Image 1 (cartoon, rainbow, N blue to C red):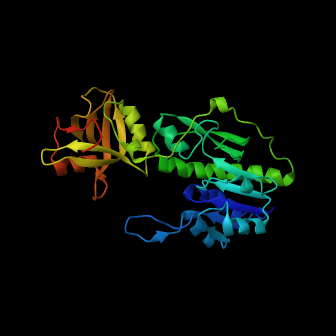
Image 2: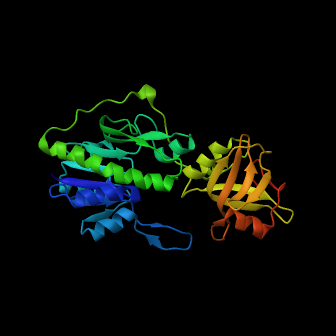
Image 3: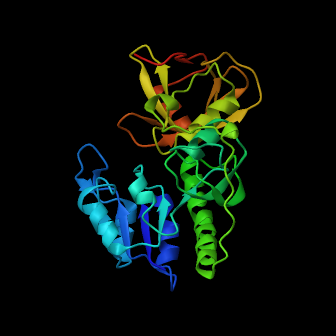
Amino acid sequence: MRLVFFGTPSIALPTLNALAAHASLRPLAVFTQPPARRSRRGEAQSCEVATQGRRLSLEVHEVETVNDGPAFECLCRLQPEVIVVVSFGQILKQRVLQLPRFGCLNFHPSLLPRYRGAAPVQRAIMAGERSSGLSIMRLVKKLDAGPILLQQAWPLSEEADAEALLAEAGELGAPLMLRVLEGLERGDMPEARAQDDAQASYAPPLSRDDGWLDFRRPAVALRDVVRGVQPWPRATCRLLMPAGDRRVIVHRASCRAGRGQPGRVEALDDLGVVVGCGEGLLCLEAVQLEGKAVQPGRALANGLRLKPGDCFAMTEGP
């Protein structure tokens, strides 16, 4: 079957690898986002899918848009029967959606119609969800609203952060996509099921503000924020210090039973800095000062000479 692959970040790699190893589903070409700067000082680098596509000796096109110009002309010349899309990062116009005979098939890591949008795993974690799902759907013009071809429930580990769960979703999604495509080859593709728009919820892209820790919230909610915003934008809070406030990036945290004043350092122990919350206590286990390496919470406390009674800010800002 004439297949073309669209994808960009690492969550797309398991599906790309599975297709490349398949006797009849090896992609004719891979379309992905153009090189981007990964750091302020670094040079532009190809994304994970482009790099892996070349390793697999596939034809790779890094394009600003696949909807127009030379990229669309190239796509037309390939005459795909199906396009597989995994976290591509570009909205596809109708001319692309209708080009392949069997449509554009997309893997989305949520139990659609819940969490349509760019950050379904992160938003589900931050909302305190303990289970989600994985969906294969046919793309339509409306965001993540196409008919469902295959779904699978997916438990969300309370110990894993968004980075780990996205990697897990990618691994679990690849065999689902293969099942649909192999059924398509045999002529027994699953019957598409329309989504119920009335049950839809949305997962917009993350912003820097999403990582702010407001200690007036329950500790369990703050722990889920810390999990949900890894590896970007990362959870942050502001430590009030006599010599000047310090911005603290929190990489890992756990919640405990107990009571404390929101934002107040209630205890220091081997696991980290224990801070009062609106409900329960939050232990900051792995933290980082701006421009410094990640360190255990207790090491931060020792370095800054923290003591019970020191406080974190309640509101964001200088």
